[in-house]
Length: 332
Image (cartoon, rainbow, N blue to C red; front, side, top):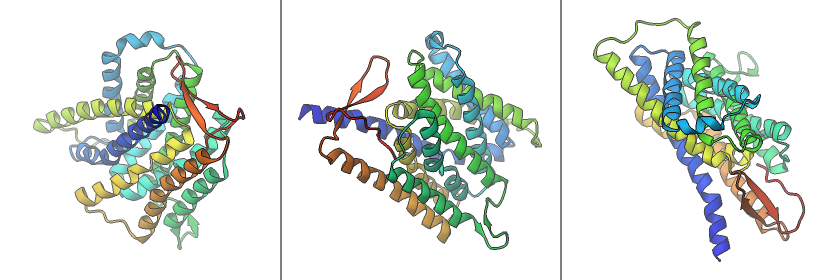
């Protein structure tokens, strides 16, 4: 009984951490639009908030800097994070939030592909079906009778699509980094992510027309928003990393779809954006995905000889020890 309870707690906390993080991301578009209204462009907002987040982590967890070692994964993670942050921020400011986010959250399809080749996670039939479902939903939403192809309709939607691919790669690289660099503290992965996003956003801001910068009282408001968002996003990222590092990448990408529900509600309440029939259909598919994921995992755990018990190792990685003694890898 105690083993079952410990197992439930060990698997539930990472899931809850990811869901809480997804809830924050589902509402972050609103303060970003507030910054845009004050004269801070999307690229500048990406650079400033990410820079503030990186500085916050380095100040609070400065002792963890000594755990950092050079590895090609660190610049790769920084680049993926830069694409993710810029695509999401720019798209959510300039586009219809719900459509941009639905394109962003094609991550189950991209994660299944990246995790298979980078992490060597076995792609199950359920994972392939859920990836195909997300792609089919995107094609239905994006289909244009005039063009005859399912393509994003504007730059904001392209930003959401590119950001989603970067997000999937970031999740996979976070897990790979936790495995290949076990001595590196999770806070330093967060600093790497925000540092990469800040640099990428700053470079992109050179190519975007800048309106008149905020002055007077607006400058103070913008500064408080930037610092507050930096603190919130850095704390939220560390929370999500706690979950991502402890469960398979495919499963994490499915749980993160909870953000779509939060975004739909916040966009309706704060921006009056009501999703159309196609967006509602895709949202329903996204809501169904975690249910299918949970049903698949329950069936897998109930199968004779396939029950796995998570073992916590000193290096912080989560591994599976199978009662049957065979090799088993959880898929999406």
